[in-house]
Length: 344
Image 1 (cartoon, rainbow, N blue to C red):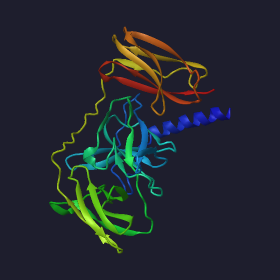
Image 2: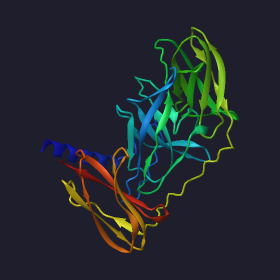
Image 3: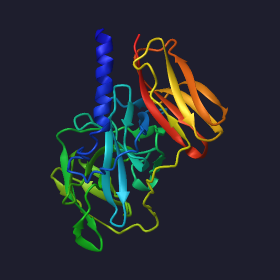
Image 4: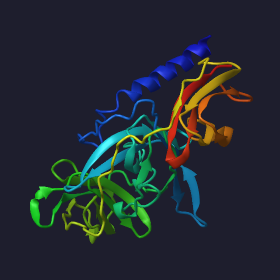
């Protein structure tokens, strides 16, 4: 009974998150949040795992144990950065972002402020926005996006480096959400993100030579080689716009669907449940069950179906109690998904 209550509470929590996306803060300062909603009946998911490469011989890879993954939109013509949603990275390195509007997003992984074991990274890997891949998410779609980062070496109590980042054509235009990384040889030693006034501070830098690199959506990346002494240093960046990268505005109009997916019954269920859907025209369809981490559990059908109503039985054999999603895919990229709860 206690297990049943805990799972139902988890479902209620997810539903709460679906309807309370706005208000999250990006980085350490207020963000311009995208407050659009997903289409009715759509439950969009981006899930994956964050790993980072350890500087060893040979190089090894381990998974993150904390931090956050955030979804951003970049809005031309000013290339302002808008936070859409975020999710925590669990102790096994996995994350899942639920219930955001369909569209195109940049995905960025951040370490925890207190345990900076990996450097901030764009999906699929890299510390420069020009290496990032924008991910398109259709209504009801589940996307798996794994992120590879690099190990960061912390040196508490060392020299801070600070400065500002601004537009090269007008220094009064401060560039918030710029990312500055400090690298000594092949080792990342710190990073910072500019605030609303374009200011940053990188703490804990040991004396020595560093490459300080700044990256900002819509502007050219810039690197300065600096020698850091035992006292605090000031390094400013003035960036020209990068017109070689075009960031278009995505059309978020709902795709016209020729089917409808219904909530399974019963829900919660044990040991089996029935999934129903309706096709308005004949087409090839695929119905699958996934874990919340995006792992395929079972393909229930994949074949051509004539117009009509259909019911498919799903038996949760050898599954743990928990929340699962089921996704109906049709022709032309049509997708719709829903959640269900299995209780042993």
